[in-house]
Image 1 (cartoon, rainbow, N blue to C red):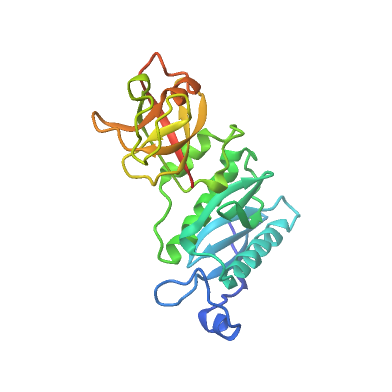
Image 2 (image 1 turned 120 degrees about the horizontal axis):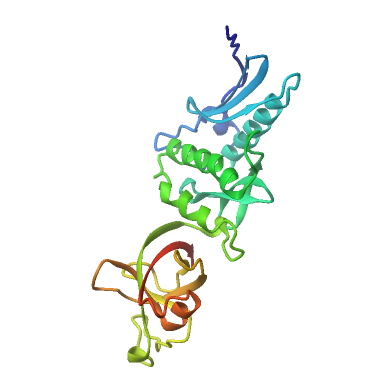
Length: 270
């Protein structure tokens, strides 16, 4: 029969405490309440388990080997880091992104790491396995602060770039997939939508809504080739295509002969 014992180890840094500290919490919701971060420890099958929860939802669970107590230590360390993060007022909660740095999960804003933590024992330490618990934790923080959660496509697409040196998950703000086309000689030298002359040999792209100057990391699913392009034009306007690439970008992606290719796109920002 299983014996399970739970005990509360760390309590919440609440809004009143933050007020006394003179901090304006970045992760407070519309009512000024900050997320509750709690560490819970229990014993199951003679193994120590420890979880970190946000507003009552377990987001990270560690398990110790028999005779070890490192699960509690890891959970407590993460809780302490999260509580410190809650005191910060130097970022907006909607800027939080999951990332992987040196085998550790990282909660980032842009290219700045706010905190790093070890993933639960049992993960294979690949970027994809490290990213998953971090993704869950970031979405729990975003939800608790009343922000929109990152779509599941962020995790799935980011994973496809895990081994690509040009991909920096800390810079990724969103992602999408779909059909890409390309254009070249017919439009070479003409004015693009942003006013500059279109150069078919440069790494540029047309998109319907993204701001001019936005950098995109594009991956051809069939060939596995990637390149970074800059949005300087508008389109495509026919078919169900999501992006129109310059001939130079299409060449990098090895899709010139295809004309149209399925791509995964990560938005890297300006």
